[in-house]
View 1 (tube, rainbow, N blue to C red):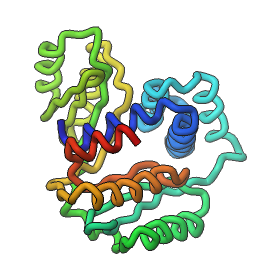
View 2 (cartoon, rainbow, N blue to C red; view 1 turned 60 degrees about the vertical axis):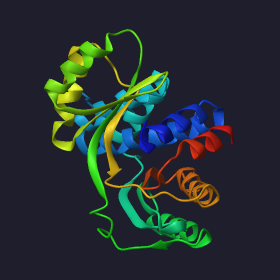
View 3 (cartoon, one colour; view 1 turned 180 degrees about the horizontal axis):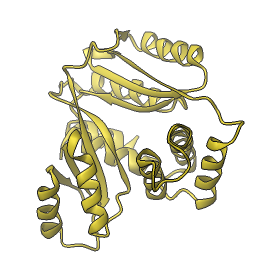
View 4 (spheres, one colour; view 1 turned 45 degrees about the vertical axis):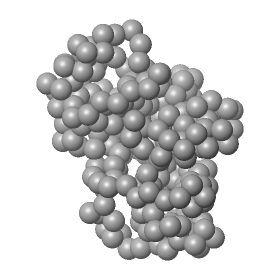
Length: 249
């Protein structure tokens, strides 16, 4: 299993506790609000909102929370979120890319800069890591109720490139331009992903010794706990030894 899948699995298990769950809901609600504000409150005609609702359902968000977020977005008192991103290097020279949705740019800039400085990292300019990550479609599917071989063949025809699984989930990866067709094929097959979206996947990963890697992950987890930060991507190799340490922490 790749580092991306290992870390996703660990995060999913940690996200079962109430505190993490609340933060996950906060991030999803922000995505629903900005999607509905920009494209309208009808998911039938707003693909970004449709995807955000899909992810909300995958995270077991109550229907009332979803509907309130949409109503808030199309109302006059909607929060004015903006999308910004940060690129730089964390401890050990690990490349880090953070995507944010914020209603206060100054607060977010100060918070992210402080996190980088505290952990011995260095912020770079936008685009400085563009050659290190590829944007790809990633789908996280509950690994039950279907014939995996048949589903994989159907998804390959729709553009899927890679499949990885653990005891609970199947992770499907495709090129960015094939995201829509793979998502539609899953719908035709009656499979609703727990999570779907465009992710930044590192072209190559960097391996560090265990203690250095744990420092990096403390930095990453600190960024992910920031309510303004939606997604954090990095090119640290998640070894089996590191995955075990993180799973037990």
